[in-house]
Image (cartoon, rainbow, N blue to C red; front, side, top):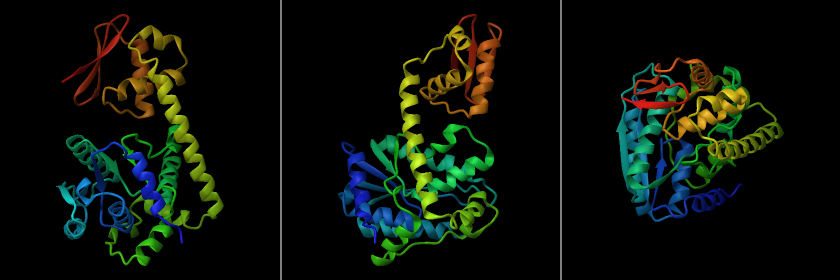
Amino acid sequence: MVDLLAAAEAAEEAAAGKIMLIAAISGGVDSVVLLDLLSKRYKTSDIIVAHVNHGIRVESSEDADFVRKMSAKYGMQYRQIDLNLGLHASEEVARDQRYAFLRKLSKEFNAKIVTAHHADDIIETIAINLVRGTGWRGLAVMSAKDIYRPLTCFYKNDLLLYAKKNGLEWREDSTNSSDLYLRNRLRKRIKTLNPSIKQNLIQLWRNQTKIARDINKETAKFSKNSRYFYLMISNDVAVEILRNFLLNKGIAQTRPQLNDILISIKTAKAGSKRTLNSSVSMCFSISEFWLEFC
């Protein structure tokens, strides 16, 4: 059986210099395995168990109670947020609010966020992006630099084997069997993939995430608010530089949104303004653009 403790070794290197770890724990088998591994490599006083009660499922409060008791058993701090999103909340809304909570804790404790995503999660997310239509960044999924995922070199079956061997208990998410969610429908098909195809997809993901990091470093060198600059370079390059410029201001935009913003940079009248979201607008002079926060 795969020795998953190697994953914790990698987590230790990635989190070097961090005072605390924020462990995102849902109560499912993946996160239960992650927490057990972390408990064997770190002082329990250095780990904060973070649980998000989305309020989507009837049994979500029972999951929260399970995770709370598990963190107490390990002697770890526990933080929880109750979102009360309701039965019809989308995966995207749940994810965005979940990560907002984790990042708030990360900032509060100057800590590294650690999640239990594994190789099958990576493949599923790539498949979702391909089905919905994606650019090249749709293959470089789960690569946020402030989140570490030490289990991505392992598959679901590896985690199940570890959990059973070590006598771990976990909660089953009832929505995982529902065909209402695209991820669940794709998961059933991905399970039948040849292992070699899965390995090739994971290697492609690793290559794309490295390319993404390299492009981010290069575009950071050219972060400008000159309208003339964006007018004179190719659209593909301009979109990447604009993306970096906005992310540094804390503003994430989709590729279609970036393309629309680029058109505004090139064509908007001096003195005009474009709304980016509920709290930020882009303003234009003859030669420059800048952001205005509400």
